[in-house]
Length: 351
Image 1 (cartoon, rainbow, N blue to C red):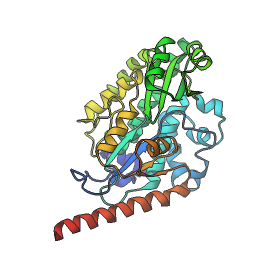
Image 2 (cartoon, rainbow, N blue to C red):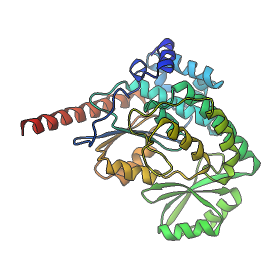
Image 3 (cartoon, one colour):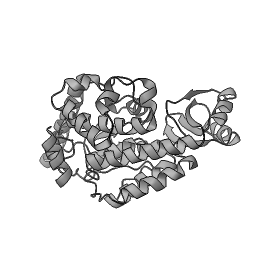
Image 4 (cartoon, rainbow, N blue to C red):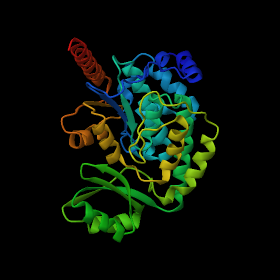
């Protein structure tokens, strides 16, 4: 993909020219195999994770252009910056969305009606909005830049953070969070809840965890998706006022409740409100199950959501894009599903 291709894509919202895999509306009813593309959120990044992708034609140029959009050196942050640097919210969020856009472009247009549905976890929902045609890549990166800056500023007011609570009885976990004044900021399903609050509250939880649980601090710099982020909502809303979203061309699931956005305007409004509201990935997973999803591809930096899908969507085949070596597996899976769907349709016509 050339710089001109990306610019043209931004002007006309054409994902065909950019190679991002959203080219047509899916069939209604999804009678056959169904592929979902999901986009990871903050905490999925690691030092050097984009380095292997620079070997693909056009990727360095695309990252350089997105760096201009954000005012950040995304090439350096994705290849040579250390863990502490890319943990910074103002850097991590644009970096993760840029990685998703770049790897979606590398994946290219998929056969058949793929993807049939898209979703993203937290900031990954902005990446999913690009795949659905709601936002251009440039608009998404500008909004995420402002989101990251505003959330970093809100985090600086009071030292806060997040910890994953793994396992345990859901009622006991909820009671423990309430006892310590913590918020269930992410309900990820599969026995995983992310608690958010002050560092003192999180330390108290870790010192006295609920029975049969493990508390794991996350590499994020604030209590995201809680009331601590209220100032960031106002800043993001101001930035979003200058964006004109398009209606989604494929179902775009919302972190608010797992429901598909009914319009581009609603999708953008939900993206803004999401900053200070819990992420209901469990609800998104339930919707994916209800749509009959049979396969799932997670964009780079992949792994977390594919892992949750293996537990929350038993039998669903998954591919996590971590390096370019994973692209062929994702394309092969999409091709296989398209062939199965065509066979199912042909069998239905014959019958």
